[in-house]
Image (cartoon, rainbow, N blue to C red):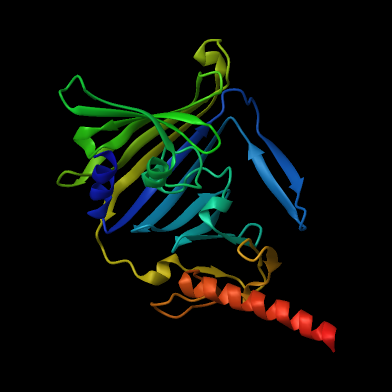
Length: 311
């Protein structure tokens, strides 16, 4: 019932174009500071900590394909999920990344439809299908609508409680993850807007992260993340396949975790199985054809080394 309602709601949104603003507030950080970490493969990774920061994302969705333009620190970062493979490009560092969703460990969800999920390695639907269901109950809200509460546990033992709103196609209105001591760890409250008749999309979500322990919540509060949709949500307009193709400059260095190496983009060019040709620079759109190309290149390299040793 819950999963059918969620998937039925989003199935009516063939494409979505939306701008999302996210504000990060850290009450325990008093001043801005920059942390620099040297990468094992070369170069440096910079991250900043500040009491408050803001990120604006333009999102284009077509089914499970997702295109993001993230405005941050004066530059626009590109991220695409195309046929269940992610590709990122950061112009500030002139570096890129290619990998599967399960390789995005520790990265929060990028898709507005998955807001409140702890990590971006799974979609909301995958969580409900794959995690262990510990409890489920159906009650009535104060307004007389149906409310379903579901307790889950993932493969790492992390427990969560979902509350689904029957008046909003059973989309989650609240998601709570727990510490091992059963205190709240990450709590998200979500509201929706009607974009078609009885079809819903995110309006606003606020996530609060708490430390464990029994002290009052205001003393354990580590971070508040508020996500709000800006402007109107544009739905069911044509979106071409090349929107989800990441184009790397020729001098960029790309970490290709599908093949486990650093590559120059020129050595990896996988075009969509169907769709327009690549444009300027070097394009990456990894689907079935892309994965086949990866296997072929690895097989050729392995056997070439074996043959060269025999000569």
